[in-house]
Structure formats: structure tokens, C-alpha cells
Image 1 (cartoon, rainbow, N blue to C red):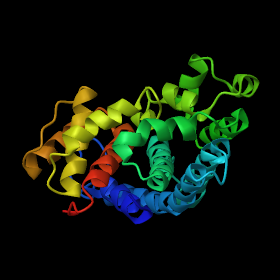
Image 2: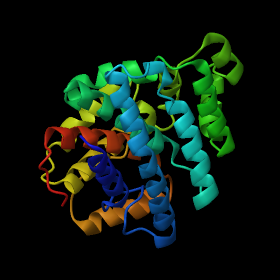
Image 3: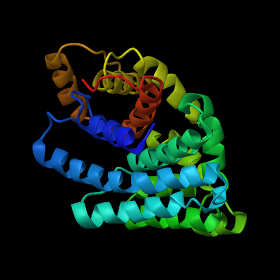
Image 4: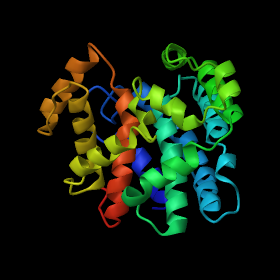
Length: 269
């Protein structure tokens, strides 16, 4: 799994139609274009965290110095400043965490599905509490009140994080209840692996993304099935009257990355 493949999965995760209740290229254009601009900013961060993952695996830097929390905080602020939209926090977290894991495991010569737990443990549970605090400050600066509230309800404030040196993985464990993009942690990564099994039935990358999304939506209580474009559009309209399911995008991305890692020749469409 390389940087360009990660970027391709991200672009298709946003654009593949039709993901009822979330982003796709047949939705209202202004919002979709803003999210594409956000995706371009996310892509800019992929090479840095990928190479840091490689450096950790090769012993060039300690795992605690990878700085994922700081990178996410910077990315969130950049999205708000340059695109003028609240970031898709869980999607960015999933992309950067999976990119670091892909770099780490590529250096070790291990497939992602086999080594994901090892990578997550090494990269998300050894950072200093101050890096986690920087991540929290990025959430605060970009209007993530729902995520901040979840952490506070779980007893995680900036002061307690500093005092107890809480790693980023512990924070992700709390946040995945609000946005499943944060499932890249020791407790949640098995959800990614399970979803990849469903997505692996897809005959193309776009089909795998749709299957992963529909499976994630089903587990969230929205019983959807792949079918005609008309039926998916109707389901999209119905769900949007009540809810937005953008919190499933990060999980969809992560599961599809596992599929592509195991099937590098999978066609895009």
C-alpha cells in the first residue's frame, strides 16, 4: 500500500455514488466541491505520516514522536481556514492513522490486515499526553463540540490528559461512539477488519467502497442494500431528511484500504 493508493481510496470514498445519507458526486454540488477541497488538503498530509510510520518501523524515530495528534490538529485548522467548513474529523483521523499504519507495515513487509493491531498499538498508544492535548485543541478550534462533549463525559479533559499522559488511542476509543472514523484503535480496529470482509465482495474499488458503506450503515441501524441507482437516490433523500451519516466515511475508507492492500490489481470502477 503506497501513498498514491491511499489518495485514490480517499477520493473515491467521497465521490462514489450513491452512499445514502453521506457524500457522493450526485449530491448538491456546492457542498460536494467543498468536501473535495477538504480531501485535497487531507491528501497533502498523507506522505508525511506515511514516512513517519516507515521511520518508526525502521527505528529512525521512537513511536511516541510520530506526532499524529499535532498533524490532525494542523489539518483541522487548515480545513476550516481554507475551505471555510467544519472538518470531517473522523475521516481525517482515519486517513492519517491508516496512512501511518500503511507506512509502518510496508517497512516491516506485513499486510495491513495481518499487522493492523501491531501498527495501531505502536503508533497510537505511545505518544506523549501533550500531543493528545494538541489534538484536542484542534477539535476545539474547529467546532467539534459533540466530540469534546463525549470526551468530557468520559472524564477526559486537557488537564487530566496532561496529568495522566493519556495517549491518542485512548481518546479515539471514546470518540468512535460519535464518529466511527475514530475506530482506528485497539478496541475498534476489529470493526474495520469485519467491514473489509463485506467490502471484499466488490469487483472494483468503487464497488468495494459502496459495499463497505452500506454494511456500516446497516450496523448503524439503516438497512440498505446495493441496488438500482434510482433506489439508492430515493434512500439518500429519505435519510437526509432525518440524519447525516458522514461519520461512517472514515470507517468506509479504512475498510477499503484493507481490501486494496490485499487486491492491488483491483480496478477503480
